[in-house]
Image 1 (cartoon, rainbow, N blue to C red):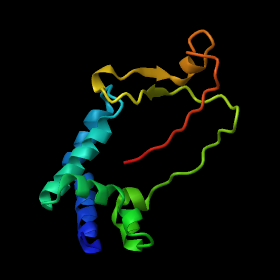
Image 2 (image 1 turned 180 degrees about the vertical axis):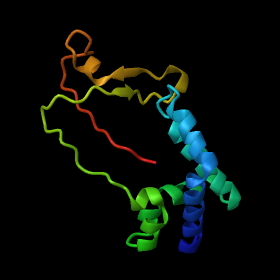
Image 3 (image 1 turned 120 degrees about the vertical axis):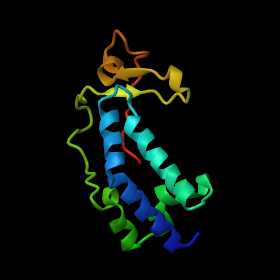
Image 4 (image 1 turned 90 degrees about the vertical axis):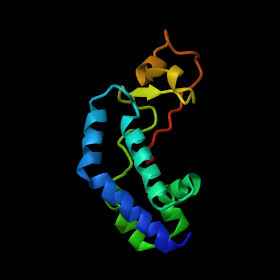
Length: 143
């Protein structure tokens, strides 16, 4: 796969992300109770791009998701995708030993029907904590 092909796929993905139909899908899943609804929308969108480019899905998804790693230093790759260009990730304000905000966590269990949902505070409360071992939480976002 060439850098030109990757960039064409990124442009198409960006076009689809910004179209009204996709924006409506994002809005509809935002009101649902599913924790990963918007990720499902993005995944289907990326699969659509692979199909449109007659690309093997595994290869195409890697190209879309890791374009910056596949083409390091390519400014155009960074500029093509709105979500890459305006990525505002930053270090948070929490420090070691600070109480975390109470957020809902989803288990990493691969079985979607049996995924457990729990809050951080539930994990920290001595009465409900599974053990007295220290709890380490790594958090991030990836699309």
